[in-house]
Image (cartoon, rainbow, N blue to C red; front, side):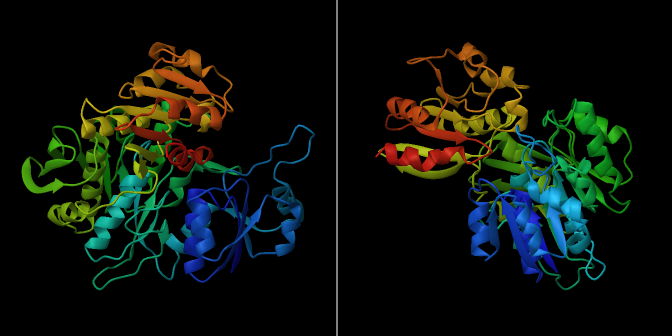
Length: 469
């Protein structure tokens, strides 16, 4: 079939496009303001990209329009639609569906080849843990399919169909299971469409303030996911999270494997980069790897517990993770110039910012300087819902630089506990050029600059490396 994807450069929709292309469908798509890595991946696949959401695209007459959740019925100040193509689809009665629903019907649970879905959910670490799990299964010779909200360095692509190997009743498919809503016409979380046999609940705290009123509302969606896991399935749950205890307290009909807490099925002893793996108190493997931070240690436990459900031993999993290269934009070293290292990281929620900087601090020790450059770009951060947590999240940074474009709240006021202004610990800037000048003036050999955003951040990484020469 021919599908035309609206919002094709989002990480999920771009992965869906790659899967559809691999499955033999004709794929075209449109988006606005595209940026790497997804735009690069789509072009490499030969998928035609159209800039914008013009109503003239109705002339393509695909078999199905697949609508991303970036698309809605919004109007511009002059009263015209923000997404004219969507209005044309509705006016003409053209067929349309959401990305998660198309994926479920045509890939995950297609009658000709239903898959064993391993879904990784959580406020933080979904992309990294999904990539870890896919890599562990790959190294075990299980040839999993996957869809990741990023580009795992070990695979070089964000999605693939995978294959069925001898002895498997179903081919395996690992998917990043997002709790964000599906589409403007389907306000359920994306992950309720996936119907996993193995579900990872990695962690859970308040996020997405633009669509959820409170933490209880998100917990309810997570329980909807739990309800879809069969009795022969497994729910892998972080035993440290009270919120997840409440989720399972609403009912669970599957085997539960816990990790993280002192009394759990899977636990770790040692530093996050070099630790023993224990299964119900007994050492079963050891992992020494390149990743840092307690959050990545927990991500590893989650991946190991999920892989165990499909027959991969802890020793096999740890051997694979010892060679795991992580994901683009997850503490990705973009370059070093004149002794200054520049990293790119996807962190945008205060907890993710804190764990990212904590991991780097553990690796570098107390003597090295960390410069944190970040933009509060997510919908939740733009609303200012978590601005009070920013000083706490940035404690491990020696200097802080905040890009304030598009904010309706005062970033300088929020960062005041750190001290704001020239020569102080924190500085703010309304444009990228000013931010670059601030960072360049402060940087010195031996520094580590971490750029954190869930968007393109104005290409700051390449600009910094050029400016520091």
